[in-house]
Image 1 (cartoon, rainbow, N blue to C red):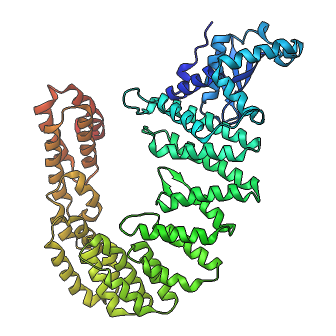
Image 2: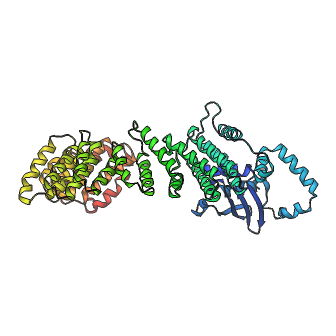
Image 3: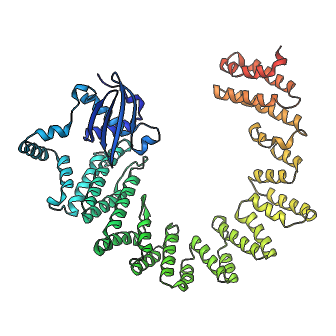
Length: 553
C-alpha cells in the first residue's frame, strides 16, 4: 500500500526530498508503534519522525531549521519516499543493522565492500573522503574537473543553462562537495578543503543558472563558513593563512570583494582585526582603489577606504586619513567622509568649498551635497546661506520637496510668509506635473478654495484623498463630480471587479450629506442602461440597495 502524502508538500520540496532518497541519504529507519523514525544525511544528520495511521501519513517532524517554521521539509519527504518503496512501516521488517553486521564474517563484508566501491562511484567518493589519510591526494585539477563536470551535468545539454527546476539538483551536487570539504576539515586536511571551497567559489560567476531559490548564495555562504572554520583551527600555519589571504587579495585587486553573491569582506576584516599582513592588505587596497578610478559606481570603494582608515589607525598613522579621503573624494560617499573629517579638524571653509564645487545642474548628483551644505549652514548659524541653499534644494535639487518647503516657512514671520508663499506657489505653477506639491501646500496653508480648483477635474478616486479638507463647504460640488465619475465608470465596466468598484463608489456617496437624490439618480440611470444585460452588475449592487434602506421601501 502506497502512502498518499505528496499533496501535503510544495513541489520543489518533493523534488529535493526524492533526490535525497534516491541518493541514499535516508538511514536508520525504525518502525515504532504508530510512527517511524529515521536519520537523513544532509549538511548535518537530521532526525525525522513520521506519524502513521493504518498506512496514512498523519504528521512529520524533523530537527532541521526549515521544519522548525512549521513547514514539511525535504527530509520528511525523503523518508516518506523511502517508506513507499521499502515498506519499512511493516513491523515484521524492523531490524537492528548493527547486530546484523556483527554477525557477518569480516571476509564477506570486505568482499561486499570492495565490490560495492568498484561499482558505485558515489560510494567510492564517500569512502575516499571518510578515509582520506589512506588515499593519494587528488590534485586541484582533478577537483576542478569533478566540480565543473558536476555543474555541467545539472544544466541543459545544448546550452548548459541551469533552469529553476534544475537549480535544486545543482544545490544538491554542490552540497556534496561542501560536505566533502567539511569532512576534510574534520580529518585535518585543511589544504585540500580550502582547495575545494575556492574552486566552488570561483565556479559561481561562471555558472549560468536561474538562482531564484538562492542556491549560489547558499554555496558561497557555506564555503566562507568553512574558510572561517579553517582559520579558527590552523593557528600558526603561516603558509595556509597566507594562501587564504592571497585568495582574498586577488578578489580585492580585481574589484570583486563583494560580487556574484560572494562576500569575502568578512574574511578580509578577520585579517585586519587580527593585525595580520596589514602592509600587504594596505598595498592591495590602494592598488585596487587606483584601478577603480574609471568606475563611477564602484560600490566597494567606500569599504576599501574604510579598511585603509582602520589600518592607518592600527599603525598610528592617522595623519594619512585626510590625504586618503581627499584623493578619492570624487566618489560622493567618500566626499562626505572627507567633508566630515575637515569639519572635525575645524576646516569649515574647506568643507564648504568642496561641497559647493560639486553642485551642478544634475539634481540627482547635487542633492546629497546640497543637503550636506544646508546642515553645515544650519549648525553654524549661517542664516542667509542656509536660506539660499534651501531655496536651491527646493527649486533645483529635490523636485519641490515638501519638507524643504516647511523648513523655508520656518524662516519667515507670519506676516512676511503670507507674501512669500504666494511667490513660491506662482513659481511652482509654471512647471508641469506639480499638482501633488501644490495640494500639499494648499492643505498646509488652509487654502481650500485653491485646493478644490486644483483637483476638481480629476476622478473620484483621486479627489477622495483630499475630501476631508473640502467637506462640508464643497459637499454638493463633490456629489456632482462623484455622480459623473460613477456613471463614467459604469459605462466602461465589463466584469464583476469593475461592477464592484462602481458599487463601492456609490456606497461612499451614500454616506455623504444630502446624497439621496444623487444616489437615486445614479441608480436610475444605471438601471435603465445596464441592469437588463448585466446580471452580475445587479448582484454586486444588492448591498448598495440594502444600504439605501428607506428609499426602496
